[in-house]
Length: 115
Image (cartoon, rainbow, N blue to C red; front, side):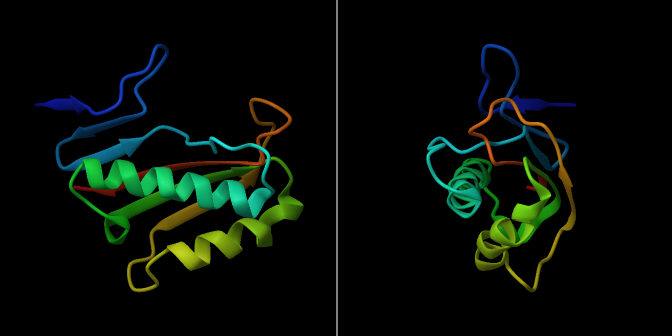
């Protein structure tokens, strides 16, 4: 049983693979000045990078959990999500409102994907 850590951090691993599955930690935007749509785009670009690093892509995303600071931003997040996701390979997904790590964080996304 091999676990490959792709992005260790000081507190937790950002991405790892195990048994043909990629696990990503919750991802937040690097640029917090944008609205929910902009932050979602930023996060999805980061997710694309980790998927590529693991040798997979968004068509292999199995599940996504999305946390929004304000559920009223649901459609703003979905605008970016709908432009990004492959409609022929939809994952299971949950979206909830949650208090995030800081006031400028609008969205956080965690995905699991097949490798």
